[in-house]
Image 1 (cartoon, rainbow, N blue to C red):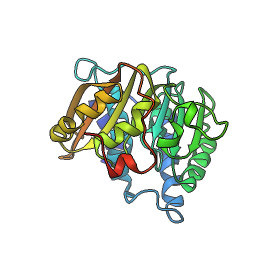
Image 2: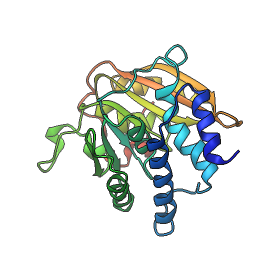
Image 3: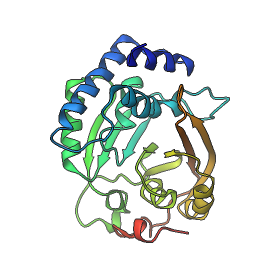
Length: 256
């Protein structure tokens, strides 16, 4: 069985059936990524089978799992930001499969966003719903209006969903992401392996930022032994104005 056929079988195992247009878009995305990766370091994963499983499938899993397994709201036209999107994961696969979402792809490296602008154009991802790239640091972009030194759009507490596959401990990542979430909205953190200890260490920080952990769901990617986890956090109240702290502090001194 070739890699794409295996991907389709894995999708069916998870109870969703990709269309030919969606498969074509994923293939075009892969080709654009591997070509651009020769100039800019986007990902170390370039084998098609691994990209299908570790990038495409993993990006989609939280939103296609049956609700009795993972009680996550289904996507329609909600406003979403992908924080630290890198090569466009999970944002681009989510936009392909849920085209009506209004998506912002945020990263601190402009070269990555230049690539993603090309992907958006080539795959015609702006036909439905809004999609944009956003350059900057999370600590600055989600700051309260009174802390901003210039007139910029206000992104703080303006998104229904915040997603991130960024590699950082959950306390740090929560300080980056929870300020972007609307009250009653959700932050979804994709993690490698099992995360029980990391979650316990982050409970206080998440509460301080206005969030509450709803569920930490461990899973194994289909037809593999690769362990992953999804952490679902809901925003219960407004984030205090002192958060996020100045750039660099969330990673140097995580909230405990």
